[in-house]
Image (cartoon, rainbow, N blue to C red; front, side, top):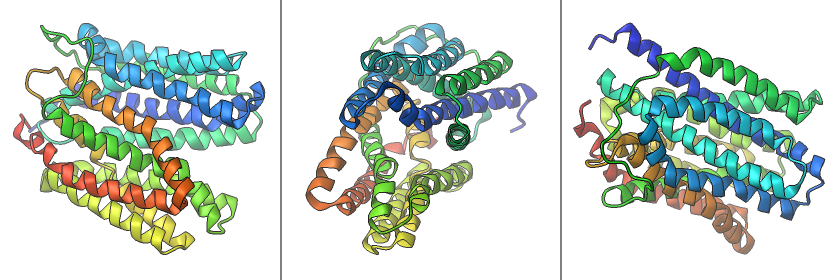
Length: 382
């Protein structure tokens, strides 16, 4: 199939928004310590406040499908992106813990709308390309997160205030949106719109897959540094765990479209999740820093295509718009992000951090089994 220049421009514009979403998310994460110190928050208070982000994300996942359907993914992506940038800047200006919680809830809501809108755009473009390209967009998200983390750490090291850091991100992001939004795709507004999107029917299995994956990924994000330190790794090595995981995941997503086109989504996700789970389990059981880092890398590669394929498969659900279906499975993934820290923390309290990673590896096995739910992906119009 010959791809015209309009589709190439649309792909570039959508890719830039995925990169921007990842960059915004990582920018906030890198400055949490500074914002917390500025307000004099204790660890337990900070933990409660950070739940505001997840609560807002959950509310956004439930309601975003109807909103994107009403205004179209092109318009929704544009304004959700700009609103998310404003939300990011506002986080550094909150004068109290209560207002920071409220601000985080709004920020999480807006970022969720942004996420569903750009995934709906990716679905529409993939259908017009006629071949798998979905994974490449999520690779751009990983790249954005990596760049956001590196730049955030660098600016923090230079002593730049969070509000100025976020303002610079806001200006650059607004310029990116202003240049690229005109090349986004016009998508049809469905005649029947759902206000709330909860998984049902075949989406339940996809949602359960996202739920398990969110917990498994959360184990790397939340516990990799703690576990590596417990093995005697110096602080700078311990900080590499999540970076290694995300870097390898980005590479896996870059190759994901080729793998899916050659072997199919079911096989790629099934054997990838199995590889990731086994690699993490063996690496953790080795009780060595090198083995743990290798296991985290295996997890990054093995789970790389899961969210792209989950969203792509959901978007073809009969009787639902792409936005509503994607929002539905995203709701379950967000629930996994909420439950994960509590579950993994409880397991770590009883059996140690290593037990939390072994649980994450076991959940990867569940994801491997649930890969059958992706079988509808290749039966669509690709």
